[in-house]
Length: 296
Image (cartoon, rainbow, N blue to C red):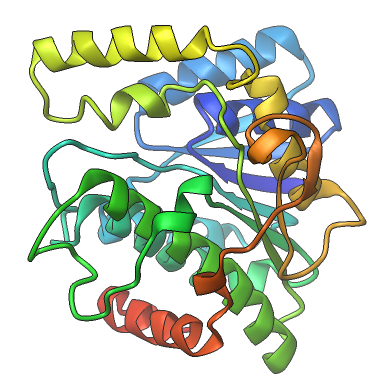
């Protein structure tokens, strides 16, 4: 099996890379920071001496970087059995933009993965795409008049919107695959409440040292609440089920099976009402094609 995983140097992406390697897969670790990616790959090789992993650079907040990765993979021409769209940024305190001028969370979390996936469809025939969403998609809102949060920016709302877009993209990709005969199964997952550096890198993005200390203190206190958080080994279970299980379905959505979908083994997750709007899903797809210049 040949897998490509974004954000594979830490958190859920790293945990999934380990799991794929354990099962004998060859993994492309698509990461933004080459040094961190290579260090993560070395840790995996130290743990699994026969591991087949390699690092590829991609900045999902830069469509030029995304296009460069897709060109390299297409030139290689090797079929991709699994693509896991995992990388992301969460709740920067102040609105920031990608290199192409999109609001950072919507641009990197959704548009970057959209622009990565579509060109790779010829390599994904017979394969599977799993896109990571989040419980926060329940408060997301697709305001097509202001997808880039230029009129007003609320970190949590913008993040929830990007994660709603991730889920809607996964479901629309599966619908279009069945309609057009692309032979690609697409689904989505969320990790519930899993302790990763996502809770640090986003909230401290561009922030002062004082805010970074406050975020660290808040996280440390929150992590002590019994039953609220799980470690990465538990957090990867829904995504692993979505990406690897023969029982995972196209258009399916999976999350932890415990209280409020925060922790626990994988089960079918609740799809928020807004993600069920097929008209909005199709509109989001078309808008994403226009914004990225990438068309299936």
